[in-house]
Length: 179
Image (tube, rainbow, N blue to C red; front, side, top):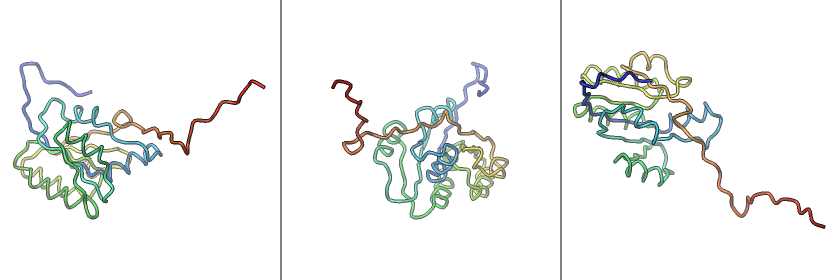
């Protein structure tokens, strides 16, 4: 549980949330053993912000198959965007983080990838608070140690999709007891 400041103190920070979608998805799937498990942004984003203002939310994802529903949800609720990446999200996320560093107080990087250690060091040297949000079991200890704060993502931050029944996959019929 987060410690709250006294009521007379108001924290006014702007926050950018940059998400390495493939890394977070793989981490959650590894943790749950289920590829139908997804982040629950409705519970996660408010917890990450902790009453601070959201300046930007960008979900970086490798590949061309990006859910239209995800794009619409992030844009509609958080004015966020989804950025497709040619390969990994490392370079696009790093470039965006350095671009927004002078415009925000805090950058939350959602990834456990040790490739971001140098980025964290750079952002901190520029006076930006850097937080990491990731699944602990798949997050680099060095990355956790380098960050100003680590928010562990747990089962309260995700949900599992239930497969839709189709005509090919109908509900099983009950045996007919009347003869």
